[in-house]
Amino acid sequence: MSEDKFNGFLDGEFGEEVLDETTKNDVKLYFEALKVFRMRYDYKPSAKLEEKIMHRFMKPRRILWEIATGVAVVAAAFYITFNLVPRRNVEPAVQESKVVSEVFDYLSLVKLVGDGF
Amino acid sequence: MRRTLFLVAVVLVTSFVLAQSFVELYLNASYFGRRIVVEKGPTKKSRIEMVYRWPNDKIVHVLDPVFLVWARRSGLFIMGQPNNYRNSPLEILDLEDLFIKQLREQGITKLEKIDKKYKVMVESPSGLFTAFITEDGLPEKIVRVFNNVTTELVYEHVEVLKESFEEVAQRYGIKSAEETVNLPNEIKLILSMVNWYTVSRLKIGDEQVVMIIANHKSGSVIKMVFSSKDVTVNIEQNEQLLRIKGKDYYLYVIAQDQAILEQVKSLLSKER
Image (cartoon, rainbow over all chains, first blue to last red):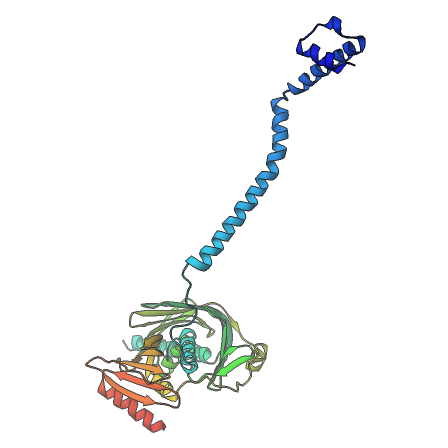
């Protein structure tokens, strides 16, 4: 094949009669290939197939997004609980002696199970 | 006329003898029962209990509001939970014990027979008691009205008890307790002078104390403040204060009536 003639023909510099048989055959193959390529290139899948394919890509992304949101919410809850909410003072303000609590507990029980003296 | 008087006398004597017989049966009865006690007044309380009663002894298993067992054996009291009993320095008297105590001391004020049971009324300084007792001497219901407080004890089931105290006590793991609850003797003695008391916690400065408000048998109010440290107790103008220092505690007795306070002092000095 003469590449110069092949390109010249495609560029419209000269007509088909100038081409030898081999180049003519190659030109024919080129047009066939171009036709097939156009057919593939112009192909548009149906809406259903498109949705199916896109869904396949979107699903993992959505799960990742949900996990990320969950982690963010938990982190925010921890932060609020341990930093912003005022903590209850665990230490009793007033220390009650053992002797006082024993007398209170005992008298309360006698009062509860008895009906007077 | 003579015949009528004779008949009236016969009826009266018969009623008296019958009344005596059912009272004797009741006082000497041994029974097991399930009962509910409800107190209505400024403060309310209720209990559900199982009771084993012998003429002189008693075992009460309180089911609600707390799980607790108390027993009276030969005039001594113990309380607690299985395998953790302690001697009680104070007497534990339920409504039934109080009724029997007043029945013995005051006698029957009024007696009515309704079908096969007796309605017994006893007026006493501790209130008006009304009890319903069957001919067999088993209790059905006891009600006390005192100072706008009504206490009602209702047996939902009563049956004759054939087991001995020891048998039931063994089942509850009741043995003679080795330890006694630590209650200052002064509080015990003062409480022997009152009909009832209330107990609460109070904060004086940084110190947690116990406040006991009691009704003296004379009707006068007597207050006690129990603390592990010396605290400043404020009193009203018409009140008198007695400060007692114990081994590891302080007790402040407050009374409006000077005579009551003197009575307390006298009682405490006798015991020392």
